[in-house]
Length: 198
Image (tube, rainbow, N blue to C red; front, side, top):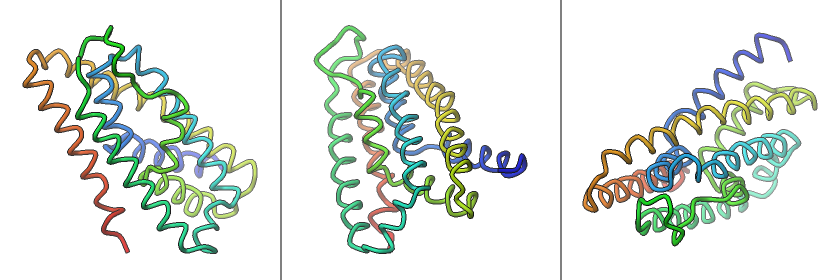
């Protein structure tokens, strides 16, 4: 991979990862509800999930959609179902107290697995491979996966810290509930492309 190609890929990774989407909305909600320290596993899981998705997409899993068109419909159903479940969980987070153990932030495995039903993550991975790595050489695929994994880290931290700062403004139960309802609503709105795409 040339230096210019790497620079373009890094720019694409930063823009696509840092902009609002399911991961960032959930990180902000987790930062507000659980704090940054308890959201570390969630942050790392997203990076690990993105790395694995880029690797497997680069190695040909994306060809499954062309070979088996029904696989796209299966992915769509799984994505919508799981994101509805996550919106429900956000709505039902009880306390903003960091010591409250009744509700738990996402684990590394849960956050990594979520990437496989996250429509934005699929769009990023497929675009990165098809546009920025047309030759799909092994070394280029590995570099792209590492770039996405590394770019995820500061972006994830920024969104989590933003949520943690917002927590200071949520001094009443009404404000906390309104915040969680807003986060759940925005998460559901992010389903629009997958629900209405052809």
